[in-house]
Image 1 (cartoon, rainbow, N blue to C red):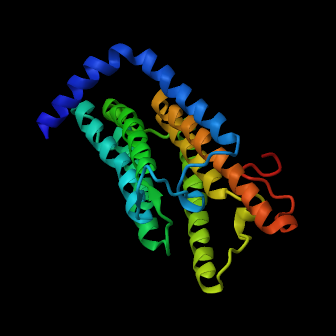
Image 2 (cartoon, one colour; image 1 turned 45 degrees about the vertical axis):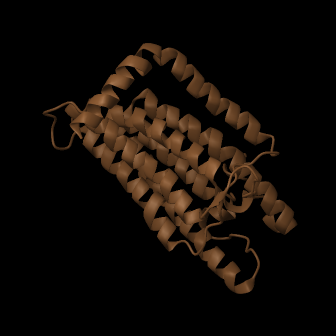
Amino acid sequence: MDAVTDLVRRLVDTYIIPNASILKTAWYSLAISAFLILSTGRIHASYGRYHVSSSLFPNVNGKLGWMIMELCSPISASLFYTTYKVAGGPLLSKGHVLLAFWYGHYLNRAIISVLLSPEMKNSRVDIVLMSGFFNFVNAGWIGSDFGRLNDSEFTLTPRTILGLILFVVGITVNISSDYHLQQLRREKAKKGDYVLPGWGLFKYILSPNYAGETVEWIGFALMMGRESAWSFVLWTVCNLWPRAAANYNWYKGKFGDKVGNRKSIIPGVY
């Protein structure tokens, strides 16, 4: 393991840190470009209900593909945390606590929710690889900051308390909404057709799981106070909000006026 962390540190110190400004600009530009492209509604990431097969890229089992690309996040965060960890920090250091929150999110996202899901449509290998690459880079940046924050004690300042509240509320909305959708998929398997969600925040927006995840990572960024975490908030918005808009259009096409005054991700606004 020491050899691996030494290699990671040499690569980052040699190729990433000297070019940090250029790489960050490219990273943010990719996020904004993805938002603009996905917002047209003509292109969707090929997974879930928007999966489209391709002659160039083979399909992969939906559950397996999801687990592979999502597990890249905790693995990368652990690797970079170990590589850049400041020794001798307090037991409840900021790095330790935030890493635990990170593990909790991905324990549900990559394993528990997948095992409990009644079905997951196939994905394509290229989508799995691109998502895995993003998760590795994103979690690597955040994980290295976890390591650097290992010498700072996690204290309940007003900013931290606000961030913790938002994180807990966001992850609760995210998980409960996802499990409600899973229950509807079970009903679809029995009845043979989709059901319009009508529980909780689904009464006001059609993608409360995405809204919850956005709030969750805003809270996380407030607690962490690092550029890496705010970069993840940007990517979350640029990836999930266009998909929420696409979901809204899909529901409108499927259920018409039954959608009512509901919006996609922000009640009464968007």
